[in-house]
Amino acid sequence: MGRSRSKPSLKGLAQKYGGSVRKRYSRVYRLLKQKRQCPECGSLKFKRESAGIWVCGRCSFKVAGGAYDVAA
Ligand SMILES: [Zn+2]
Image (cartoon, rainbow, N blue to C red):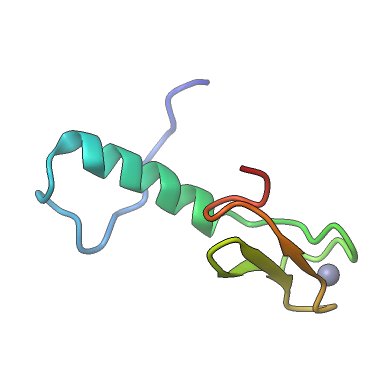
């Protein structure tokens, strides 16, 4: 994996909690906000509804997955 260009700003976690936690949080946060494709209709409105539950905003396809990523 190469180094990413610019990291998105992380609201609320400026100088808190120490480096390792922030690194972990930013990784998970980016994973969470990533655009995903619905396996059913191919739309990008596939989002996490709650921890472990992923739902498509277009066709309402719902699937159980990881807490922060569909396949974790
Ligand atoms: Zn869909």
